[in-house]
Length: 71
Image 1 (cartoon, rainbow, N blue to C red):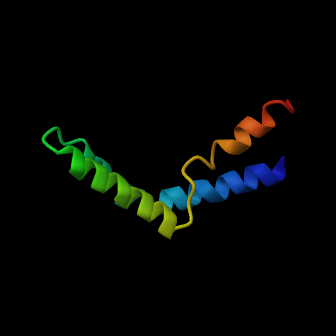
Image 2: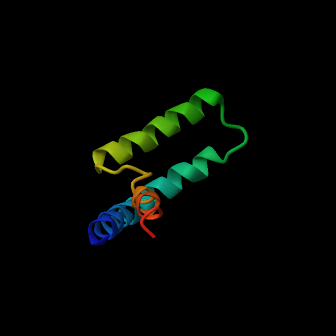
């Protein structure tokens, strides 16, 4: 279980490191006057940030689901 916890903590720290960039993009996405193409472009920009920083946004949840049957 220690391995899963460690990996989850590392991913969480990586997500916190890019949080300011992601918050700025999320704020732009909430604009109701934004066209669908602009929303798509901003979503792609978020995915580029994840790839650049080697982050899987769902990696923090995977260890939790793996450990559930054990407990």
